[in-house]
Length: 179
Image 1 (cartoon, rainbow, N blue to C red):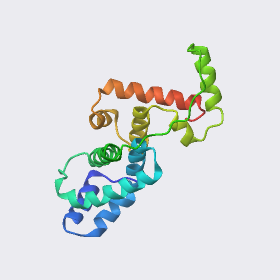
Image 2: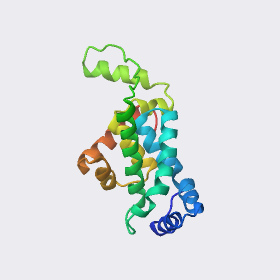
Image 3: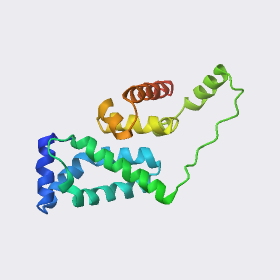
Image 4: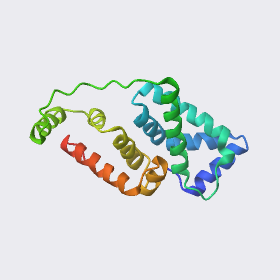
């Protein structure tokens, strides 16, 4: 469930007046998208929950900075993603990655290993096979319902690169039997 720009602006206005129902409405509409965007960066549910909660607290404080007529979803997810990146920098969390078996380096060997690895993965595990940027792009595109152009601006990457990485990620997920 998301809001139109005018619905969002109405709720931001309520926040600016100190009315909690504005924040509650935005929270209910965007909690999954914000959490997904943050978790795509952090890869840690507990940390993602903390940063997501901090995001909505920050939204209360910065509501006056929103420019009406802007793309509210992209604005929020940019802030949330930046908070997640800042969190990583601050705490320098190391991401644990399961080791993939040694490969001879040829394409058939790699494809066979990938097929074996992907054969019985849950969706969460399948998403973990994606590169960091691919996960973020998929999250912003699907959960955030953003356009490639908006994602390009958020991630500060060329539009073509975003589209290419998204298609590559979908290809990997399809090989893992997820559409």
